[in-house]
Length: 540
Figure: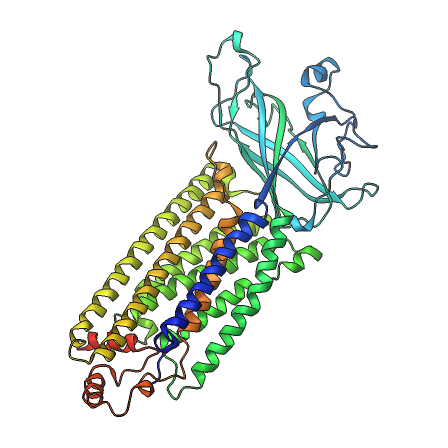
């Protein structure tokens, strides 16, 4: 009976395949570590204080901090008071990028963080729970001569979280509060060369707008975008890996369909895993370089979520199919208790993403972190997601342990076989156990990557706590997923080679062993003999 390639390929060839895959894995880490720059770059901006001399503010007027048409500027608020300029007539202007530089579609996204420089005054202290109301407009242009075109406009509120580390006395007036960074803006693509932010802090005593927020001296912004060099390396990896997985997937399914029996659940799930890997590999991001597709960031998150759900479900079914007896296995409904929570968690991830990035398609200044409730929900979500990922890994370890114990119970029938056949089956068991350990390693790295990715997305909102993720980690994990899926489809593809054909027909003991082997593992359809052994063992 022909089995899968993992059990019929010679040990020498398997070692060669393993070494090649290991070299590709090392290469994927080296691509990120030696070739690609860091994934993101942070650029600091200090807002220029412009004066709006028009009595009735014109929403179409844009204030440039520098250049030929720069605005009327003031150095500080003391100068504004001396010139009797009201706070409502002051516009904080920030040009992105810095002078003599250009933004590029290769930057993929732009995240902007805001920080207030607030001086302590005895008569103007920051009140508890103070809210800063921000009237902000965003404009763009693609050359230095054209007019600015409005891209977005919104009135937002951000809660101030500031500490004054010394005693609040007259002697300490003028010292700055230590204020947390505030989420400000996120763009899903960077389609234009120049961006301009005009920020107003409207004051109204009657409406209690911007009262009790202290004496704001300056506004600082941090612009974070993906490095163009990293983007090119990332796109190149996707472009190379897409046909590789697509070819092995077509080859795998063609071998499955050539069999006389219908494919079992495990084979269908392996094919579905290949489909999801291909879906996340397809380099549609190339179009974001030439088209103004603001939804690409959200689309990328959705693709990643689908792949996570499929990969985690595959590992559960992969282990479970080697635990179930013949009556239970090969039925997807058996796994609803394990796969159901994975699907539900992925759906929650999608809802959480839509609540922020979905809204940002219309209003780039929206942030779920801007309110207390949103911040608590986001923090709770990240913590719960991390805990669930760890619990999943522990449950997977338990399932692998059960599979090992199930296979070990099968060893009792091996001593009755001849040495050659016993060594053959011991080799099969070793190969399968090694593959399960590789699976656990891959699962552990995936869980670590998921947790770090979640923390990294929210680290700007956590005060001083930051997480630096190296490019090698991104490219290495991405390469690991592709190599793992490639290896599973290759090793579990039906083999044309038959172990029995290699045995001598003149072996007197072969007939008796074949009878024993038949009573042990035949009449159980499956991709490998280990699969059949575990199913029969559980049945007995």
